Each structure stands twice: as structure tokens, then as C-alpha cells.
Length: 640
Ligand code: MIC
Ligand code: SF4
Image (cartoon, rainbow, N blue to C red):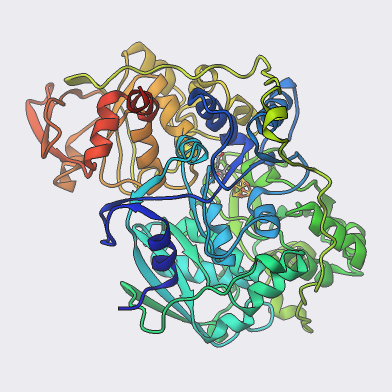
């Protein structure tokens, strides 16, 4: 039987396991990627492994998230990352060079290779035909050290694209349509693999928008074949010689299928506060808007910014709108300057920001109280913009441009004449803010620079025979890692300092959580479905662990967060009978016997005199990791 493209690449990289969905496999990772907000922790963990140099074929460290240097903290982290890159043979992409996923796509991603990145939108590189997976920093550190990445062998959802996008409809609307159909957890356990006649009409940046935001479905990753359009993009980036054709076998079998006729798509938007609440723009038309933000790793390509520039050229943005542009890379900035599009954006009234994540992660540009913010980004979780009561809508660059002109949510199809943007045949590639690795002898002499913001990783003990304590908090469905460990200008600078950042755990939901957790000597978290969706930040496991969280009991988990909990020795447990969720309350006094992890477990609710059966889906290796108190302890033990 033939294989799909994803199955072929996985097979070629498989070190352990069998091709059977749901079973644990280990794969070799060719490339690694980190960004600064998760990277400092990943490199502290890499350092603790005691190697002289990275072992992955290509490792790149990006500085793109924490760029608001309101005091020494972020700048100290940047210096640390620069010295680490020099010391260990890693390529550094300095602050201002661009957003990790966009820059990786432009300069490094290669069809048929594997990539692991400490950021949930790493699948962007799937737009070039690479298997690119987001993970916690510790998993990336292991891959840099040459270790395999463990994951559940995924099912493949084949997505057949037919027809062609109508005018004013783009890649963003394809992924919004998929989210409309399968919501924020419909992709769990799957790789979304695209095929079909419409591929010939989709450029790499369009495809990368789709694979980027595929993350919001909860999938393991997304992938497009590598074809003539891929070749054209790589040639334009001066990397034509790295292109190879990659596609599924003709008789490939998909575990599930979906078909989308691109010709039937209309401009769409995700409503607050979930990327999965998608409606046609016609339902929102006329709604007063305060802010328009264009950019992020989803929509900051040349095409995306050019369509905006073309739409606003010679016009003036509505006076009540504050509008920003964050270009994906310096290469894109240079290209926009060359074509004159940059001047068109400036003249229309956009606030031009540097290349980076910026407002997407709440690094400045928070909207006013009660604002409506229209963004080309991929996430609109409550509070993520930096303003708790603001409403964020996620749209295409076309909708954002029309809205910025009109001051109300607008349908770009009413703007009239449309001109398709052609990709440049040769980009003005900018390499000025990369620092490339030194030869090993020289690298060994490099001294690592650590500012006062960089605190060593706390040590965690082994798993005890039983756990007791209170339910510290009970939360509902689809709790994101932004709820558990918020980001934004105030909290992100503390990413290298676990004691300090743990003071903000659950601060979006319940500001008393850290105090209560410490006062009670730790305890349990109870949650609903899809707990921990969203970002890959391991701080959402590490900081609760630091506060004494022992086990997390929920209806179901999101993939990356479940892996992060295991990495830091927290038991990820689920209810055997989902209705038992209703029998637990904050403050309940629990006892959990951990002496036997081989099957079903019992949670005693001592104050209510009831017992609740719990289950887990830990592999034998994961049980060993948890027993040791986490992956670092486990790795140290295996080495010794
Ligand atoms: C995000 O979009 O939430 C982030 C910030 O890029 C995160 C990583 C992080 O928390 O540092 C992600 O998506 O993994
Ligand atoms: Fe940066 Fe936003 Fe992309 Fe996360 S989603 S990597 S914060 S641009």
C-alpha cells in the first residue's frame, strides 16, 4: 500500500516504533528552532546536558518575541542567547531579523526534512513540505543533543483542495474554513496533509498561512507537497539547489478525508475568544472597530503585506483606527521598500513596527478598554492582546485592509478591482542580522553571558508513592496555556526566571492561585476538555510545578501541554467517566495512590467520602520519566 507524504517522511526518520496510529514512535529531527521566549529555558536545559556542540544538522535560535526592552531583562536574555549560539554551533537570528517561522521558511526549511521547534507554530515550515512539529523547550533541547523526539504515530487527514480562490479571498480563509468545520480540537491526533488540483494555484506563503494556523485545530502538524511552486519560492530565496520534489504515492490511503472547493470560499473571521468560532464576514459587517493589526507568523509574508499596500495605496485609513504592520522578515521589508509598497503603507497612515511578534503576543500595542481589535493573527484568546476586556477578531489581510479604510468591519469584495500579487522571482535576501556558527575549536572558548534575569532551573524530586492535597482550581473546557501562564509585556520578560514567573500562574482566571497553591503546599488542578491548548510554552507546566501542583486531572489534554507536564514530572490524568468532573469542587481534599501506574487509578475525595476512577495513556517510557520526576532527571539517570 502506498504512503502519504507525511507517512513517507516519518518512515524515513523513524528510529523506534511501528506505523500504527496512537502508538509511541521515536523520530530523528534534522532541524531545530527556538525563539527567545521559550529558548532561554531550552538552552539552560541543553547546557545541563553537558555537550560541547549541537548535534542536529541545523539549529537556529531566533529573537523575535521579547523585543520590548523596557528594562534590562529582555536585553540580558538576548545576550545570553547570542553567547549560547556562538558557544554551541547554532545559527542566531538577531532581534529585528524577523519572526522565527517566516524567517525559517525563507532561509532554512527544506522539503523532506524534519524540524522540531519550541513554538507551537513550527508547522509553518510544512508549507515547504517539511514535517515540522512544535514541542516544549526540553524536547527541543534533547533534539539539539542528538536525541530522538517521541510522539504518538499520527493519523492522516487528507484535505483535498479543488477550484481556485475567488478575488479578495486568500490562504487565511482556507484555514478559517477548516477551523469552522473541525474547531480547536478536531485535528488532535492527526497530521493535516493537503493535496488536489488547487495546489497549483497556491504559493508557498499562502500554504504556510494554512499550515501555520493548522496548529489551532490541535493537530500534530500540517504539510503540503513540494512541487513547482515550492521550487519557484526556494529559487526566489536563492536556495533553488535545496529543492526536491516530495509528494504522496498515487495509491496513498488517508485515515480521514475532507474536501474544500476554494471557489466557494468567502472572507471569514474568528470571533472572540477562540480561533474556532468562525463566521462569514457578512455577519460582522458594519461593526465599529478600534484597532487593526497586520502581521504575525500567519500573515506577514510579502504577498500579505503587498495586498494591503495595494488596497490602501493613495487612500487614508479611517481616523478612528489605529493600525499597525509587523513585517515577517527584513527580506520582506527590503522587498517592500524596493517596490515602493512600504511608502504606500506609511502614507496611508499605518504605524510601521519592526519585524517580530509584537502585538500578537501582547508585546505592546494593547488596544483601549472594551476595544474591538481586528487582527491577521492566529489567536484571539481573552486578554492575549494585553487588554482583558478587548474583543479580538482574526481575519485575512484583505479584510484587515478594508476594515482599516472603513473604520468598521468590512467585506473587501466591495472594494472593487482586484489585482493578484505575483511573488518576486528573486527576493532581496537580507542576511545582515544572522550570526553563523564558529569552527568548533574557537567556539569552545566562547564565554556564556548570564545577566541577573537568568535563574538556574529548579530541581524536582522523584514521584512519591501517593499524593494528597486540595483541588487548587477547577476550570472548564478549552483552557489555553495563555490562561495557565499568560504572556504579554509584563510577564514575558520573566521567562528565564521560574520563581518570578510562577507568581502569575492562572492570573487571567484567578489572581489568588499562586498564593493559595503556596499556602496549601501544592495540590491538584481539575479541568475540562482540550486542557492546555494553544502555545508550546513549557512554563505552563514548569511554573505550576514550582508552585507544588502534583497532578492534573481533566477530561482531555492538548498534545504539547500533555508532553510538557510529563517532562516536568506532573501526572496527566483523565476521568474514566467524564461525568465525574461534576463531582469535584475547588477545595476538595484528595488522596491519589501512585504505587501502581499499570492501569486504572483511584482518586479518593476524602471530604465527600467518594472515589473517582481515573485513567492515563502514558507509554512505559513516559511512566519511567514521571517516576524519575521529569525528563531532565530521567536523562541524567540514563546517561549515568
Ligand atoms: C504564542 O503564539 O503563544 C507563542 C508565544 O509563540 C508560543 C510560544 C511561547 O509561549 O513562547 C507558542 O505558540 O508556542
Ligand atoms: Fe509570534 Fe504570534 Fe507567531 Fe506566536 S503566534 S510565534 S507570538 S507571531
